[in-house]
Length: 421
Image 1 (cartoon, rainbow, N blue to C red):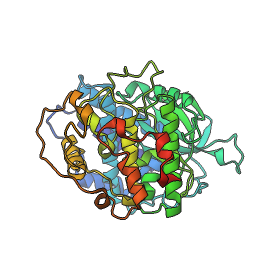
Image 2: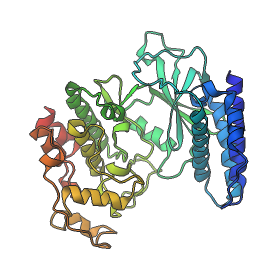
Image 3: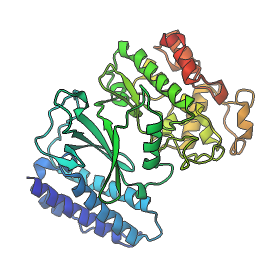
C-alpha cells in the first residue's frame, strides 16, 4: 500500500515539475482528467499521503518541484521556489482527495496519548514520525522519543523541520532556536534540543502539544473555567519575553498551544521573533514590517513604523483576548479574503473610529501617515463590539486594543487587571 502511494506521489510531483518548467504564461494540460482517474484509482483509499509518507519522500518530491520552478524562473529566490513547491504539492493532494473517500481527521478529539501507528518515519533518534502540519517554511512531525518511558509525558514530541537556506526574512529558524534558548520560561514552549538533518535541515524538538487555542475557539470548545487561566498564561508569557526585550511578532490563537483543553497554555512559533541581543535581528529602529498575521497586525505596522516596540504584541494579544472573552472563532477585525492591509485599516477604523493625532499622536511620525484620506467613522461602543462579555473583560480588551502604542497595557499590567484576578 505504501509503495502505491509513493508511486502516485512521485508521478504527481513529476507532472507538477513539468508544468513548472513551462515558459511563464503557458499552461500545460498534460495531466488530463482521465489520467487523474487512472492514477488515483490505484490509491483511492489512501490519497492523503501526507500522514504516512516519510519526511525524506516528501522532501525529495518538493525539492524536484522547487528545482524545476527555479530552472524555469532563474531570477526567483530559493524561498520563492520552495513556497511554489509546497503549493504545488498541496494542489496535487487536493486533486487526489477529490476522488478519494473522506479522510479521517486523526487530530480531532485527540488526547495527550493518541494511538500512534506501528510504523513511521525515523527522524534523527526519534521514531514513528507522523506528519502533523505545514508551515510556510517548515514541516511539523509528531514522533516518539525512544529514550523516554511509555509513562513519561515527554515521550511524545513535535519535530519542527526547517531548511535555513530556503527561508526568507523575517523567517529565520536558527535565530528562532537561539531566541528560544534565551527565553526559557514557564509559559514559553520549551526547546528540548536541536539537531541537523541531511540536506541542510535544522530540526527543533519540542514537547508535543495536542491543542491549539485557534481550534478550541473555532469549535467553541474552550470552557468558561479555562478562559481566564489561558489569558493569564498568555500575558505571563508576554511579560517574561518583554522583560528580556524580546518581541514575538506573531501573537495569534494558533501560536498559543495547550497540553489539554483546560491548559496550561504556552507561547509557540518564534520563527519571526526579534531580540535586541541577537546579531541576526534588524536594528531597533529599522525593524521589518512584514510581521504578524492579517487581522492580528497592529496599526503601526500598516503605516510604516519600523521602530515599533513590544507593544506590537500587546495589540495582537488584545485581539486574542477579545476572542477568548466573547468572540470565539470570530476575529475582532477583518482583513478580507485576501488579507488586504487597506481592508484591515478600514475594519479597524469602522470598529474603533477613525483616529486623528489627538487620539494617536505618535502617528505623526509614521512613514505612511497622511498619505491617504480616510472616511471618518465614529466607531462603535465596546459594549457593542463585545456584546456578551463582562464589563471587566471589556475593559481589559479596550485597554490593549488602543491606537497609541504607549497607552496599551504591558503584559505585567494585564496580569494585574481585575479581569484576570
